[in-house]
Image 1 (cartoon, rainbow, N blue to C red):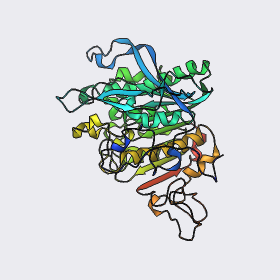
Image 2 (tube, rainbow, N blue to C red):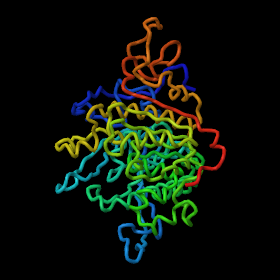
Image 3 (spheres, one colour):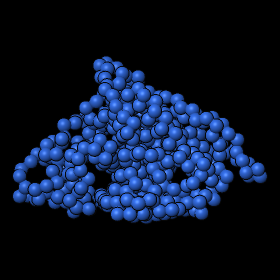
Length: 450
């Protein structure tokens, strides 16, 4: 139990200042946060191992080969690489892995390559068995290397984390957007169920404890895989060829390939699917697993009001949370911009927010994701006080002068008249809002039809 005492995990590093070049982070990984990080952001007690596995999904429709005249698409085997992080036995003297990837740059420039330092050791022996499984889905044209701030962090806390390489078409060619909109949830379901079986047989994961994390297009995919039913009359149904989408709709012969049963929790960061996409309509009522939405209220890419905020209001069958970064935009799901991505604004804007320090933003996300998964995946009630904040607006929290004297960097207990959010330091809980709602009584019955 952790309530009532200092969190024992320690991270090493210096502060990153908003708008700075993050030079202070050059010698540490994105998952290692600075002195101002909230309490649960700090690394856990485990060393981290890393490896890549290859999965093949047989006989899948190739969306980009769709022939409108015939109403059919070629069928091919779909190969997915999956990066796997897991609690590992410490390997003294071993060099941590350095991740490499590339993201689309501003046309006509070629993709921009970058590297990210990690804490994981490649192929290190696993420590222990039967850990919860967390499947992570990146954004449109992104790469798992840009999300190690959360994948490595969670592995150090006793999770097996599987991040999918979705191999999207370039986001700069929107004529191919139907491919990720159809394939993203199907990839997530296939990988989650495959790893449940494969890693469950190896006793590395506990099949009964599965969670999803998705960012942007990955957030849309996670919500769909969690049970949000596609709206057959919505705008998205006009984008995806009807003959390809129909089998996966509710009542279709392949509907089970588009949703996961028995989820413990879902985290959607700046999720797509609202606004002009119109993916689900009331179909989001199909989600009943605990849900955490994380978004910036100045998101110009997927729109906050018709996206995360609307999803929070509509998903009434789920125990749900909405963490809002006031003034933040869309890039909240990726780590700090590597130095190689700082020469051009287009490349930097994949990663950085115009207002928030990215290290600060990631640390707050890691804190709340840790609390949320701890509470609903590990079923540890001692995490609940970190979610049951005493005031909705973080800036309204008070640390009275009459409170017992504590060190300058003490974490708020969130009790005893101190209403600064639990796990945050005084003067360091600003610009945030956390809404939460219990499932309605209607959740006891079937989800509303589409």
